[in-house]
Amino acid sequence: MFASESAQRVSYRHNDQHGQAIGLPVGKVVCVGRNYMDHIQEMSNQVSEVPLLFMKPSTAVVDMREPVAVPTIQGECHNELEVAVLIAAKLTKVTPEQASKAVYAIGLGLDLTLRDEQSRLKEIGQPWERAKSFDGSCPLSPFVLVNSLSNNDHFVFQLHINEQLVQSGDTNLMLTPILQLISEISHHFTLLPGDVILTGTPKGVGPLHVGDKITAVLEGHLSISTRVSSQ
Ligand code: ZN
Image (cartoon, rainbow, N blue to C red; front, side, top):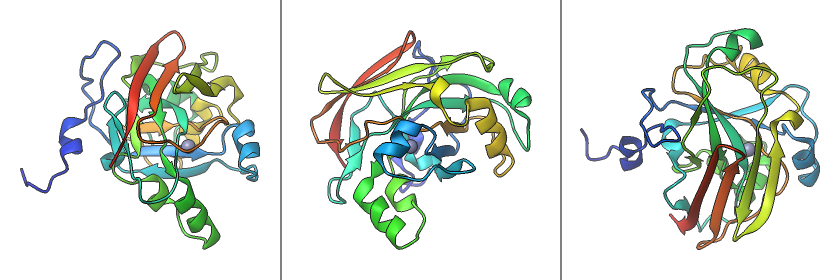
């Protein structure tokens, strides 16, 4: 092993809610922007006619139970709590029905976003990776195994910062629901076992500060408490 290999890549594994390692590799993270109307409104963004997609590399993924390390010299770093979907099969150009059988587990992810940097990139028409795909930009919770997902399944989730409720979401309110989203993504990028989809954030994004206490809840399944530290 080379000394330059990132420590976080070596140490992060997908885990289940009982603390057992999941036997899937850590792959890419495909994210969707503007999937909840209340967040589109808080950002004064336009509704996207097709899902707005971007990616985080595997080097962005860290364990949410560890302190969340934010870069402190690049302006505001915002919380975006999202439902995370862990994929267990290779998916190329699949239907929502085919996608339903490939969902292995559900968890939570933080799509950490350098908001000042993102605004700068938007203004000059450049891609968002510098703002959203940096090392550690994707803290993931342990996953709840589901084996498959139907259109009737929905998830309620919350983010508390310093005991204050700041984000409250329900996957029933997504503009593009989970199975349609996986199908759409698979028509552009093949998904592999171990890849993760982040499904968009509801309103309530805002700057994180070193020392903040974060609690992320997937109702009925998970409650993860962690702290914000500096990178
Ligand atoms: Zn997001």
